Image (cartoon, helix red, strand yellow):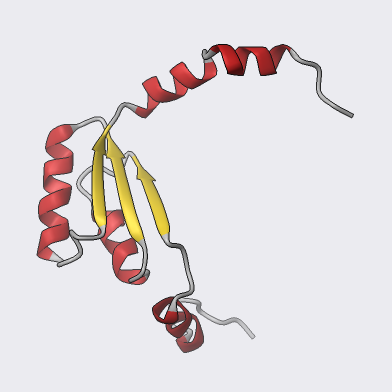
Length: 103
């Protein structure tokens, strides 16, 4: 028998009683649609929205305020492509890449 997790009362009660994630990161979250939906689905979670576009994040803040979950949604302006490039090119990462894998 197939159960739909969105309509499963036990699953929804678990999230409201403290189950589910406590922190969610939405990379490239733009105007915050997904962040708000996640904040509503997981009432104990905080959601961090990362996007490189400041005007999109202003929209995300406004959208979160409309849905009264702006106290749990945090917006961060970052270019994740740049962050990942910096991380992969860091001396620590390059040193790890040069070491043979352990068996």
